[in-house]
Length: 595
Image 1 (cartoon, one colour):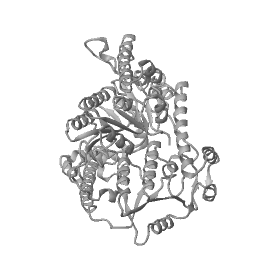
Image 2 (spheres, helix red, strand yellow):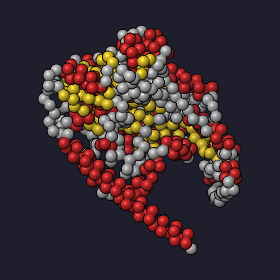
Image 3 (spheres, helix red, strand yellow):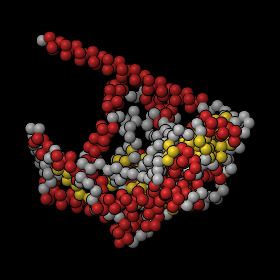
Image 4 (cartoon, helix red, strand yellow):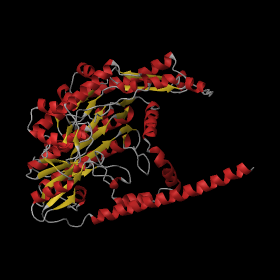
């Protein structure tokens, strides 16, 4: 009895403490929203009228496009907005230059390439770019790739220069499942559709290794060639320097990889000196938020963005945000709304996705076709990743652009389940199924293996989706179906490889996509345009108002689970579980973006 009361009162105290902490967390979240709204309003105050040196910190992780979370306003400026803001700064006489804090460990190759291109355009406008690195400490070349075109690169004299190449790690769970008597059952079209290998294999298959080495090598070639051009070297010289990494700061300076050694304070002083008397630093995000005319008579180009896995529905992960996803309903409706808007002259769709649901991908594909039928040219701009379902939605566009380092293609499908009956036996757990109807009723049960007829029926479904996918690519890209079948088979390609294969039209970034959209819409190249996001972005105040619908129970749950959910091992387990439980046919790639 004594133990009962100890347990009882301990539980009561735990609940009370948890509720108090949840309440505190909830009010902190509300305060953050209010602070964001006030910060947004404060940022509209006038900036200096001359001598601005914009400041960009690339050490902070950031998304490709704005988050759809109610707390998205607190995220660092996304890549697309960095590009747009630097473009506006090019024509602003107040802005003299840009000061960058380099990423020490590496970015995704597509993000690095987009930023490098934006910096080149900014320099071409006559403004300087000065970068400081507190070391290029990671072995990836991508952090250096992003800023190699700077006018000056400073390196802290006690730091190192360690970029050596690119690497990608793949986790294989086949041996783990075998150890626990679990049976992965997957079907894939075809041998290069390697997402299934994560569950069925304990090592690379020949096809998987071939594709991975090919696209990593292609990305490395693109980075090496770009860095060599930026620094005035031959590509072979840059390769040799990477081959002999790591280098000391003095060694990097002597080799010509950096221009100056010194601390960030000294680099900042050099930037201000270059900008001239009275210059001062302004965060790029503050400059981005500066009030600009809300209305103009310029032609309108719609901008529709999607990042993350493609899923059915709206793609929202809850009121407290979470992993970014592309909802089939959300993106399709945005495209159709833009198509119906009489002021919209063209549509640019920005994609950063490994794919996902075949059904949701087809829903977005249909919307893009409807937009084209309505007379609106559609241009797709690929970010770091636009593979599998991400390529499916790009295929019908009038024009497709990718970075040289974009991972795309992966034209294939897969699906299956993990049978846990043997695992249950190990722990004395028994699961019995009761069903009515046809034999296929239990096809996706994790408690029993497929029968031969169930497997054949499931494979038949996937085969039909694969045939639809390849035919849609053939029609959209105006390629013979036989050619598509040769280059499909689930294989991942880089943007540079995809250009050679006819899967994309041009190597280019976001601004190039806007230029193509203007051309297809009959807008003069020198004319200004208004980029209008569909749907419109919510302001911090609107996000705050939306939060009033969040219950205290939701806040309490979020507060208790947040720390646990952020653990990397929990994230990995959840991703594996989510992927293995996708009962629909999937257009998805798990190819790792190398860093």
